[in-house]
Length: 490
Image (cartoon, rainbow, N blue to C red; front, side, top):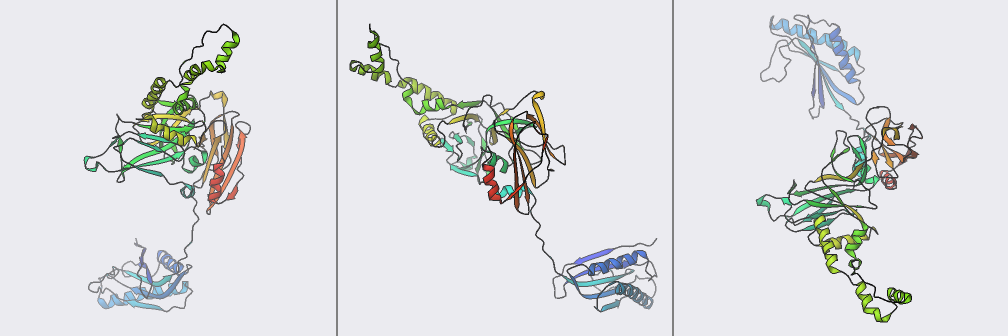
């Protein structure tokens, strides 16, 4: 059976003659006729020349043979092979370029790099130039959009041998005790970089691929952060007996909050895992008692008075004779106050309550009644204050968004009554389907699409269970406008 080998060389030689491409037809012994396979190869060579952007500057057809038979016979046979290929090829192309012929018989020049010498073949050698059309393919991966909108990480440079308090731009407070990090002896005395990222609103969660999901179950969040420590780009480990204290600011206390750590799943989104770390709270009342010691006063015992109005006058402080007694009543009980502040320092890992007080005074400028969830842990990375939003099956419902999942599309549900960011299931390739939603809960179906460097946003308010499916109503906007709109999500 005839062996056909289709050999195509792409010689990217940048020279005055341009590039070369070789189409080779192999023959059986002592043959020069073309069969169907040979004709196909020649047609492919003609099709190459017809491609847009290809300009041929020269065509040469070389004939070869192997060693059997006499040298003169082989030269004649190689001539026939080259001529047969030329006649068919010339009939297939629309070009006035002269086709050159060469026939080499069995000749194998010394130090040749041409592997076709000594073989039963004919080569079509096309010298050409190519005008490449550089097509800008529009970015369609939505992660390219998020990279544009993400805020840079906050970086704090500290002396790891000193007690340090750090406050993030969104109010996160981190207490780092002296000697908390495991540092090699040869690097002792060097400064450490603390990297902090904060995700307290829906916009920052969406842009950074955060979710409030734990193995598919919805969570209510009290705040998410990412924290790590580096020395010369090397991540450090925290000593187990010197945990860091993390304080997550909030507006109101939600009972049942627990401490979670996070890892990205194969789809690139965050999955939160429950830990055994206890979560404490610092309430507004505790905060005010810390800041304002006059709340700790000595007890005042009402002096015996036989008349009703006499007692009232004492209570009101209207009796000048009782002035010093009233002053004693308003005096601070410093013993009780110090006992209280010492207990807070112990709970929150603060060496000196005065340091914590100064940091909290900065926070009170942002929030009138600051509230904190507090966790002490030796773990670094992604962490979150969360609680499972558990309801019986009869109180749950489903919702579908009529937009197929794709690399340039993200769909979410965000809730109004509690802070939760839900992702769709991955079961349906045609729609974004959400499950385990509390019936009648107010939420917004948020769909974001990114095409041709243009962002499209759809936000639809609804009550879960009222409609089984919603169709997005997109509005085109720039990436900057999108970020502004996401900031409005509550």
